[in-house]
Length: 577
Image 1 (tube, one colour):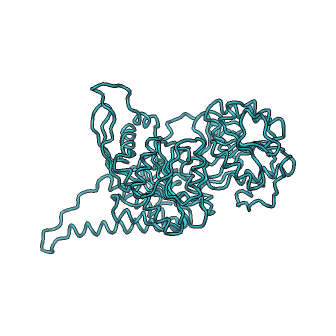
Image 2 (cartoon, rainbow, N blue to C red):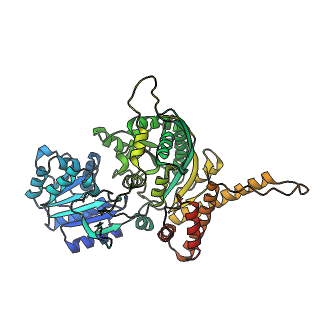
Image 3 (cartoon, rainbow, N blue to C red):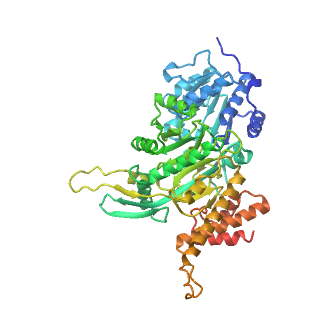
């Protein structure tokens, strides 16, 4: 018996961007439509409403959803069922056709890549709408892209969705439109774009505070040399990779200190308006994930849920955590994209993955707003490339074909090399060994600006930032961070004055020593933030847009990474705007 048609009047109300995009879609009636919307904005609801409209007016008879993972197949089928669209999440390539009591099926890109002709026959049998979720995955492997193109060329309609930066390779993504720009390069073109800054303004997503932790690290190289470096200081990519690896070592002090701080932040959120707030630690591999879970149990006294791979039990564990009030979930990458756990509000980015695509996917797990004023907090190593990504949360990236490719930020293969032990054996073998690492709060990044000065873990200065209220608007977050920073600096000056105070009869005070480069950068960042805040109050422009304009004029990276000379140039420039 064929399934009942979905009733349009039972759909939840659409958000403004969803209504606008739907009107544009129905006006065009084009075969292909690409919607880019930030994680948490409601791409699934938008796509299902389009599906319902097309089923109701007879444009299509069937719906196929292509998702990145097995877990997301279940999530899509459940969301569709809630609005009266029945999709078979258990469909396998061997089934050849969907059962008659379904409107269609949900499959993965891997499924399509393995048997494109099966899906081509399904598409040709009935007039079909194909929803390609996170369409950039069609470029993950050439076979996936070729399979998607072969399988779904006969579709009556194709709706492409993505919520993250497009890829950085030169593989064209099937069914995406490309336009040649003035520089002669082809760039992807979306039909509807709803970015993080738009969603933040509309209250659809949460403001995200990034708490970047630096610290002293010490390790032994494969050659047997002992090295030490401060995480976040300028150094070669190889040294960054090794210091980063040392910090993330569960046997050191850095991770326990950061996890303790993250759990303290989670407690603040739970006590101030988000009683079920949950935390997620994103780890690089299974062994480390288990070690982090043990650390969390020691810190909190409560077991953490662990999701290690995209296997049969993973979806159930994620669903159980999402519906519970358990404090922490530890995962290896698979919770980085599309997985819907709205109560996640605190994250620890403890992975080596550092591409803009992956970073945006990971941060997207924390931005989904449930009520006005909720905020998200993400703890991360003070690694220059990660700080840059955190400062550019609002950046929109197109897929560019033919552009000479510099490394996209941090060179991931260096970190992979640092993570790998040599396979040699023998008495003379010397393996990489993390020796020690300590953590301190380096800075807080919000809306493209950097706040605060270094604060040792466990000190009142750190607690000032960990104790920020959990329910705040974006403007309130910015004002409060500015106030906290001013108080912190005033307290530092007072302590310095008390230390150097001398009786009036004493000899004239010595000239204070010149500031170190690190102190100079902090002072310049503080001055730049104050000038940007003043311009924000004069013009109403968001802080992030002012910082972006300064970068456009002056060049260089975000202020969290900028050199002393770059900060000085931006200060001079903003004073003339």
